[in-house]
Image (cartoon, rainbow, N blue to C red; front, side):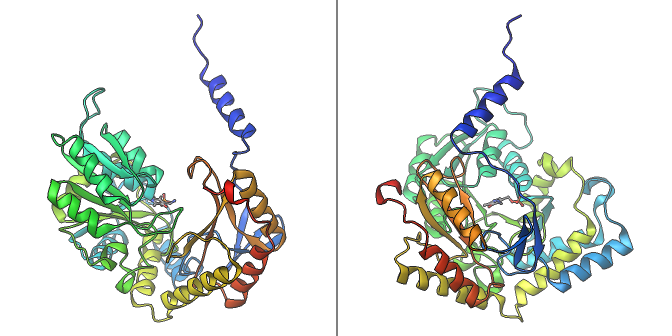
Length: 405
Ligand code: PMP
């Protein structure tokens, strides 16, 4: 039989990626406060998403250890079996209150939250039927991969609109007006750092009977009063954004995710999201640590959001003095376009030599020609570390103008 070989196909795809210089590898990066130890050297981390510097906070560590000592580590079962504990229930209530919604549902990761919630919302539990779209899902071109995957998993017709273009979203909705529809967007774009045009998207959805789904992985904790995120900062509520997704592994310094909305919507998701129903509940100790993080984030007695804002302003002002072509972003994500993947990798290596951990983001994570240094700021950075990073950036060779798309 002449059947093509799956492993051979995988290997040739991997080899092609290697040849294009686009292989990605995990490095061991041990934590040491705001620094990482890489190959025995301490580097200042300017690439993580611990925006408020909470991952190593004593309150989180204490809550985690206390709960693990009392309850053990693993929950041993899914939420709907016997894995749901007091800490999960309390965290869900607190997340709902924080985001101004009736109910929140915990997931083990943000990727799983998006896959599961989209599958439930777009497919209502039915298996996808080839050739028959379950719904229309209209997405920003720069949305996170898990939103794209979620729509495909649900058997929806996926249409994408130009980045941050609400009119483009409207045109895509109008193209298939007979299908039930969702518009899904990142609240803060993970690789560009800009904020979605949420009021305009809400108006487009309202006029066309479409559901607006916002993934606020990078907005929660950072934007809005009490860090309640990009939706709250835009003055929008549940009527405008019925489904809000948030992650717990970024500004909250933990791991996991949640979907928040009206109780009936969340109940439907709990019934049909396979990544909720069929997976082991996150450790209760992690839920306890997240509750401690949430208290710090909401009430912010240590002024972390203010420090973060000051750090962002310092970095942007310094970069402007140096003539660095940063992308327009007011959030902790401050990308510096490099054009080619080779230029981005060389710049990241030069920064590592200078003592900074900044990662080159290359296609396919970003579009062709859009390779960049994704520099991220945290409340934990001191002004002199930011100035030192700026000095190192000033010494990088500038990418040719034509190479930057
Ligand atoms: N959505 C967005 C916008 C993200 O940036 C990420 C993290 N890369 C996720 C979802 C996935 O979250 P998690 O890391 O918790 O799976």
